[in-house]
Image 1 (tube, one colour):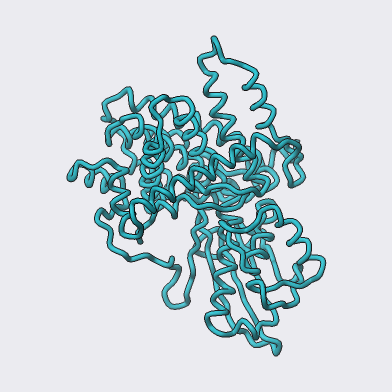
Image 2 (tube, rainbow, N blue to C red):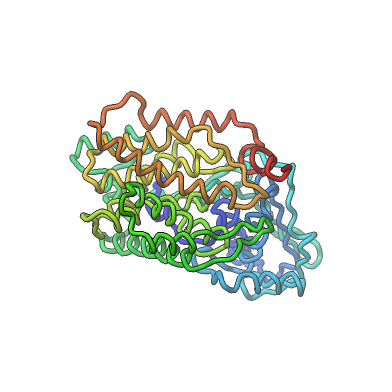
Length: 457
């Protein structure tokens, strides 16, 4: 399957790409399937079951709300985040839901939206099933989906096993591994961004790619701005205070004179602002997941605000380069915290951001790959243990730290000549193997690590 830059970077809703964006898309796919089959008008009942990590932490991640919105026909990139609480409350109060916004049926959440905290489906921790019946109790449809990270959804069919709606369009430079990608660059003299762009051109014009990426960048900037304007506490019961606004005001009052790391405080601010917006269910860019959504925007803000050579061409090249590394991570590793822990989310985002920054600062292809390798290698083994099942502790601060790590990885790579012993493909393989060995309680189930010990304290 060919993966586009716009698959890796998509506008969505917080707090989780796998637990919020994915379930919303799956619910929408299910009801759109009913409409395509001509049976939507016959539906009298719909039942959703969430398994594994979705069931264990779904309430904290907003999976229940996402399913309700998806059944009503909403898409993560379009839903009005300001109206979500009111709409969800109306469904719960009336016991009625409008499938695709038009066909109204009874809906009792206790019976029709079930979260299995200890049961999993066989093929991925983020499994879910949807079923629909007519008034006589005849089953009209039954589907199984898997939310595999970054908002990607696999559709399981009885005959073929789990499949993704594959785009089989031939691209000029197909690649799955970093070695494939670097081989294309060596053979053609193209940069990683140019290779990625050439592949994108099979779907869109160059002007469309550019405008699409600049739109992604604008959404990232808007998210940082909103995050710096909001205060109070985050939803969910932990009463985590929002810190970005106060930090922003403090940094504006300082000039940073005599503090060589003053700029890094701004980088941390950018990441905190994004991830506080994400935790509150706001509009974010999945990059490549929502749990790690603050890292690429933070590093891009570092590039555009503090480096004199920055321009829009650099922003486009940054995102294309980061996306190419993201393709390799998704194709040969994982970007799912429920599958491999947070090494697959924050680690992947750090690698992508480090690669993008290195490219726009004039790094060679080898240096770009080296930066990505450094960024990922030093997140190996990182667990996903959200306290209370919420994307708040340690997720928000973890993005700030991951952002500064990405900048450090880039600087280390740029100071070298690109040669290194451990290559990116080996680190990705290690991440995948480490994730397979990692106990389930450390993979987005809120049953281990900080999620357990903080509650105990």
